[in-house]
Image 1: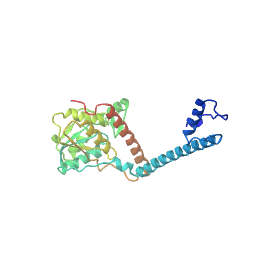
Image 2: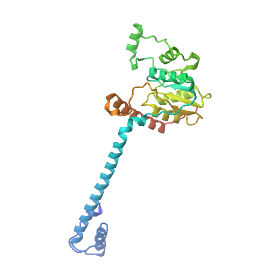
Image 3: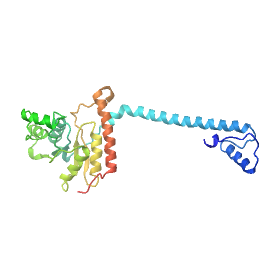
Image 4: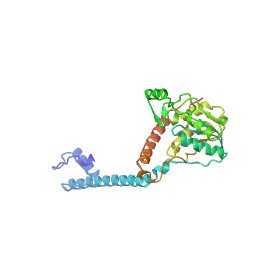
Length: 272
């Protein structure tokens, strides 16, 4: 484009150097032309280049919009991944929604698919799925609405539903984020990891959780399988019709991007 914008001389070249420069300007867009007609041909050449550039941009934008239009209806379904699980030594209940996930773990144990259930504990200040501050948590304890010495809700629920207590392992402490959950599981059970490990989480987080655990356990001989709880009310189809589902999908893609970047920058499987 810069060659096309260089000024023309109306007077004939006065030297061999000037004549050569004029020929170079013309040759960048069209065959060498003499006289004033060359200037018009050069302008036409630049206009053609601009039109070609605009067409390329239009095609690229149209292709992108088409791809998005085809993918968006399936954006919710893509997040949900469920592997075929015939048998696994253990299932790990990720923190977040302990009730629905504990029910899924109970089902797997009753069907003889898993031999043991590992539970990642919820934060103490999480009441009815909501994180509360220290002041509110202390007030709830004073009102005897919360018992800080009580066992984890998921464990209590599993025992009440018939899972033997010796088949339930509650990890030592809560973990912030799925990456830290995966690293904690690897650290706690290092040296005695099972051949297969089933992840029990929400539907929308199932693909992200499986990706994270597979990255963290990539140096270990452990097969990571996903089993999202069927008791999760998330609707993957037509997710955009319900505000709650739409917010879940958008948030989950944000988390997925952040987790992918975090694992790419940091060490996905630290030596333990």
